[in-house]
Length: 348
Image (cartoon, rainbow, N blue to C red; front, side, top):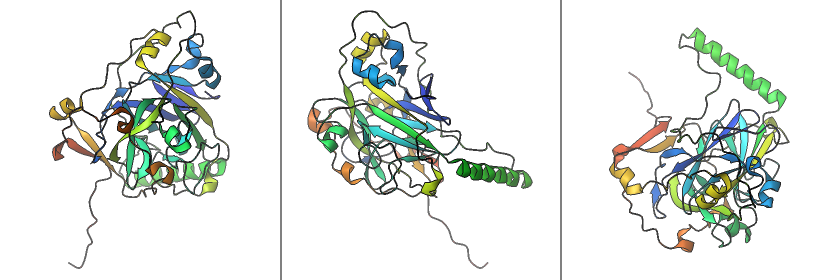
């Protein structure tokens, strides 16, 4: 982790108060387009430095954090921030938004970052118009990762995060806008609101407690893991409406997130890994919610050309035999702005 990046429970916090949580979820079927699956609790996250004697040398050099995932398990990233931020998300050092190689600079054509807090979460790669393909864990070395399919080789794996803050001048303007809005709310007796909305929280994960001391002995020969893609879901990645000059030229912080198999997690940390993911059909049969998110003012980015042809993990691991039952209409909960078409007024 770079200076100023910290681990708060299972949440990685980058400078400027940009928080990222890694959320367990249901893996979608690879056919069809689906609503947003639920959050099933946070993945446990640990600092690599706390287990320096147990992790591979390569991990020590890269630093950062690690978390356990089962092969073909799905995740989504939940974002929160204290002030506006631009956040880059890499999968094996391939940008999950633009499909371009990882960069230490922001780009607009194509956009290679998500805008916070407008983007409350990200469930996968930008591979379709108004849709994404779900993040799914796969072993390295088979070519199934996004990295392998886009670049032709698998070197990095894991997840990379890097954030950019507003310039001092842009931050000053933003603060003035917040003060004017607070004043307007008070004057109209609506009541004051927090100066900046945070990302919508997801259900909290199970508590795993403080990490135990790293076990002694030789480093674990951990199997490298990366992210491939699974099913398609309805999700927009929003266009940045700020001028490019509003963002700092240099990143505020960055962190490398290593993905660990449950077996290696136990060997490295001494902790029992989380249980295997919940059965999809059982979840839907129980009447539990799925989600849809709508932002009336947001504009979706175009699909990233390098990502549109990324094939799902089923092409490497065979057909998905886990039973699937679509949620009923009443199980899909609408978040964000109310969806629907505007109604024009006329003469009375």
